[in-house]
Amino acid sequence: MRRWMVLAAGVLGCLGVMIGAYGAHGLEASLTDQQLSVEDVQKRLEQCDIAVRYHMLHVLAILCLGIVASDLAVRLRTLAVVFFLLGILLFCGGLYAMVFLGVMGHWAIVPSGGLCFMLGWLCVALIAISKQPPSEK
Image 1 (cartoon, rainbow, N blue to C red):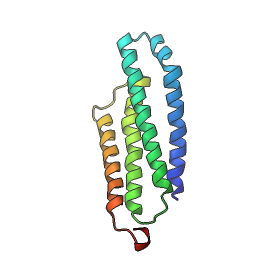
Image 2 (image 1 turned 120 degrees about the vertical axis):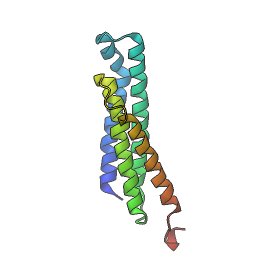
Image 3 (image 1 turned 90 degrees about the vertical axis):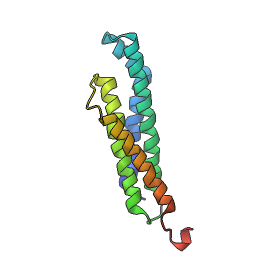
Image 4 (image 1 turned 60 degrees about the vertical axis):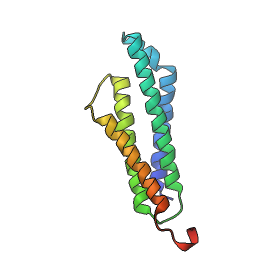
């Protein structure tokens, strides 16, 4: 077990639930209080939902990679987790910044996070085809 991966999954999972709960129960009123248009409020609510969904999905992927027992493909597994962490930071973080702060960072931040997610999943696929010891085949 990779404790740091499980720890990251636990902390990020808790954060994802907190953001999701706020998005479901307090965000709309907060955005309305900012006198945003109905369309802008709806757009930000949808962005929050997308960010939380991707956030939590990749937290589960990090958790799974952290509890995999095999010591083979450790580098690929670590690389996948790093890509997933970067994806959460860039993709979800970029969307969260737009939702909560109304700040649109550099145009490439969110797509770069999406690319990190894709690279992480490709690392997972490479783990599956990497050479396994005879006892694990």
